[in-house]
Length: 401
Image (cartoon, rainbow, N blue to C red; front, side, top):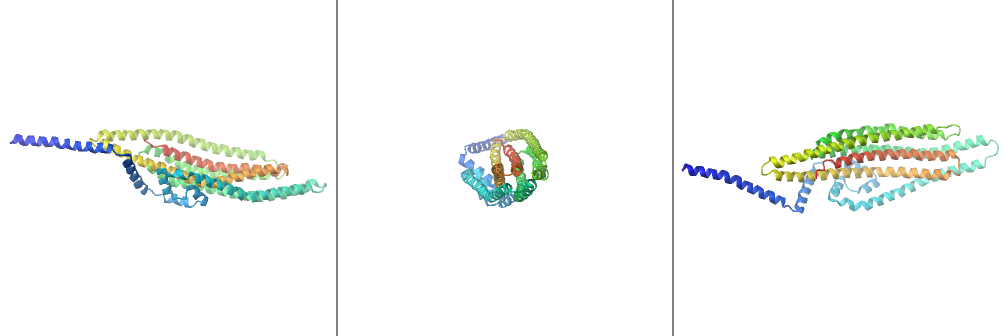
């Protein structure tokens, strides 16, 4: 009797694990045979779940602070809707309207600057007519008075618009800083969730440097240099006896060296550290997958495949949030950049028109002012490009598939 009982117990202990293994193998086999639509449904559910846990309210506020043109370029959607469009690929359908909006904005800026430029040309032509009709005696004194009056009127008109452009540039840089302070924590949180711990430790100081130090350098050092250059341009063209071209050239060179040095150091640091960190995280992720697959009996392969789907959805969200942030940044800078470009080109055109018909000092001042406006364009585009570079590096990091 004891032999039969022992034999029964032995059969039970052998048969149950065998049956369990068979059921698990069937489950894994069935999961391996999932159709593409079923996999898409799983990823879509995971994406919806993860998006619901993220807070985009501050990015929505940044979007709502844009003017109507900026919102139209962004797409007149909420930030969350834009992310979903990027994930599903529907964003590409609205690219034609973006270029139409930019073209309309360009022509609107041209029409907006026509009155001011016409006024400058009218003042300069009046100066030329009065100078040509002045008495032959006392030519120098009367000519200087006429020049000062005409030059002062042009300065009042153009410097007033230049101050507006300077304020517009400062506000744009602050808006970009605000967006970076909101977007990067979300990106780094997602990057941490998918295993990019080493990359996060590299990007955190880079984010702090970009959103803090570099923006402060732009606003507190480079913008005052722009103002000094503008002042020396004005004073240097008051009289033929005052020569300040070397000072103007010095401030221009100082501006270029500072922004070039900042950009070179930041880009080199980010590229070297980012590539190294991404490689380390890739090795760590593959090691973890191998450990799960080979250390957990029977279920290791199933859990490893499930991890792939979860990480895939997180990578989609990370890249979509990064792309959405870049689109928002583009919608933020396109209006001021186009304003500055049109203003600069208009000044160059006016300078070319006035060169043969008026005093060389007036034409020279307008030309130098146009070069100064180009420095403001460099400030915005330089900051935006570093934002693009850092976001692109984060988007390219931890893409383990």
